[in-house]
Structure formats: C-alpha cells, structure tokens
Figure: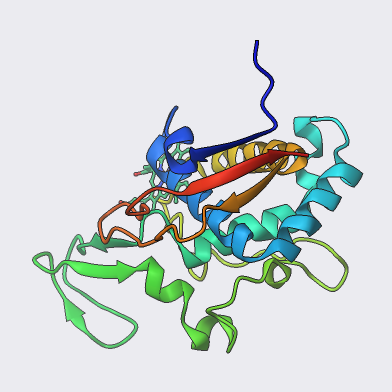
Length: 209
Ligand code: HEM
C-alpha cells in the first residue's frame, strides 16, 4: 500500500459517479474552485467541521451552517442546471402582463437570476456564505422562487435534500483532511450547455493535512 501526502488530480472527474452524478459533480467542482479562490472561507469551513463534527456523523451535518451557506452560494452562482424552459398548459397571462399560450416556450435563466443585484443586492457577484446566515447564527431560508437552482413549484427537484447531504459529506471529509490548490495557470471556463460543467475539468494539487 502506498501512502500519499501530496498529489495532483482532475477533481471534476473524481466526482463523476453515482445517482444524479452530473449535477452534483458539477456543483462540487465549482464549489472547490470557489473555495480555492476564497481561502478564508475554506479555513472557516475546516474550523466549523473540526469543532461541530469532530468525527463524521450524518446527524451532525445540520450543524454545519457555514458549510451549508457555502454550498448555497455555489449553487446560486454556478447552478448546475443553468436554464430551463416551460410552456403553459393553457393560455395565461404572466405577472409581467405578457400573454402566453401552449405554443410558447418560456426560458428561465437560473444563472442570471442568481446574479441579479435587484434580487441579491449589490454584492450579488461575490461568493459570501455569510449571506445565508442570520444574526442569530442560524440558516436563513430563501424562498425557492428566489433561489431557483432546484426549480420551484410542484415539479421542483426531488433530490434537493439528498444533494445537500452528499455535497456536505464530501466537502466536510475532503476539507478536514486535505488542502486543495488549483494548479497554477489552469483555465476554468464554463461549458454553455444544459449542464453547467467546467470546460477543462478542475486540476488541483492536494496535500494531506
Ligand atoms: C446539485 C444537484 C441538483 C440540481 C441543481 C438539480 C436540479 C433540478 C432541477 C432544476 C429540476 C427541475 C427540472 C425541470 O423543471 O424540468 C430537477 C428535477 C428533478 N431532480 Fe434534481 N437536481 C439535483 C440533484 C438531484 C438528485 C441528487 C436527485 C435524485 C437522487 C434528483 C432528482 C430529481 C428528480 C426526480 C426530478 C424531477 C421532478 C419532477 O419532475 O417532478 N436531482 N432537478
């Protein structure tokens, strides 16, 4: 058996396994990229994990409020499903006053909504997990029509809870044990498609803590 303390991998390919793999792998890839650009947030998550969940216990995942905020920020800025379209079942009038009928395809951009200053404030473009935490240190719940990564209404995503469970589990265990740095000069570009992947994957150096 070989014990590795430092190695390089393409993180996006490591996450590509399991049910609903593409959405969760896309989200985790952007999550680690955002954290590598925000080392302070990475440290805060590490401290929170070590303090509130010293040994992995799924029952403790709810206590990881800052980590939850960081996952929400990732999904707000880089929604794995960046746009969607819907058609009305019968002629209708939208709140904006537009008349629509069954032949219309209404395109909704989750990506644009997540970055609108009128919705999220002047710092809408910034990665700020604190945005999701109230003054009392609890998680702030945003309406699903505002935080649209999982869509809203009767056909919203059925895997939302499972997504947070999986993402927080992977994030907590990786951040607790490893330091991650994106390989210098590595290009990160999104693929403009139905799934918001990273064009060249995410090449990182991993060091055991
Ligand atoms: C980051 C992770 C995920 C994101 C961003 C996401 C996003 C979405 C979105 C936007 C929709 C609505 C699609 C539409 O209106 O056409 C949806 C539907 C759905 N998702 Fe997810 N999803 C994620 C993970 C998962 C997981 C892990 C599962 C199951 C294990 C899952 C199961 C489903 C199902 C069954 C639907 C269809 C619901 C219905 O039509 O009634 N999703 N998801």
